[in-house]
Amino acid sequence: MENNNIEKFELINGQAVINLNYNVITANEEMYRFIGTSTAAGISFLEIIHQVDLDDFIDVCHHLREGQESDMVVRMRRADNSYRWILVHIARFRLKTMDSSVDYFELYASDILALRKHCSVLSQKLFEIEHAGKISNVNNQIYTEDEAKEYCYNLIKNDPSAEFTMILGEIDDLDSYRKLKGNDFTESVINTALETSRRIMGDRGIIYMKDDEHFILIVNGINQEVNLRPFLESLRYRISWDEMIANSVDNLTLSLGVVRYPQNGDNLRLCATKLAKAIEICHLRGKSKYIIYREHLHGNITL
Image: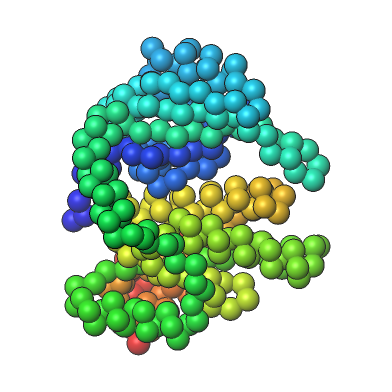
């Protein structure tokens, strides 16, 4: 059984974008884990703030104008229904699209006690980085399919107990964008999705284009669902948000098929087959969702 101990996921550097009605538009993995992925999408941020601190939070947000920011401390409800003291930085921005403009808040939040506990660890890491003379860069390379296979084989070769997640991503209704806006616009939409995916993934894995419309992420360290679902939520909603900023695309959605090695298969060919079936199930269920492949739900495939 997976260990879903919420104590492992204290809120450090949580980030969320909320609208003027205080509904969550998108958030990063840390925030999704903290508030709980089962209720994160579209939740009112006011439901997370302790009632005693609610008026102060609303008052601070209400008095912010475009480009202004403020800091405050509030109690926020964690996924296990306990309240934590959180340091929140709030900034108000305005996004201008082709037809209108959208005002929104960006929130950056960290658990005060967790910050204190992690301070020495962060200081040590900073010391090591400074003395190493370099900072590890986010992997900006788009791999080929053959290079991705070699990457997976090396993971398995170097660590027989290796675990990684394969995520097949598809922008819903991409053909419609191509017909209405043309190839250059569609290419920009795809590139934005790739760039956002790389930024979220960081140095945890690689990404490659399967074909003109599908990309695949191979990510380490998220096989357990307590890690996987926040990653998927962050990926879907952050790409949608970034597409609105970069390309003025409203309400872009994605379908994601997800397979975990070795849970879903101990060879890459079997994983790839289940990955294709997972995205097919997304199509059948109306798109704009992710399917984490489970044999007892989606069928046991043998090759």
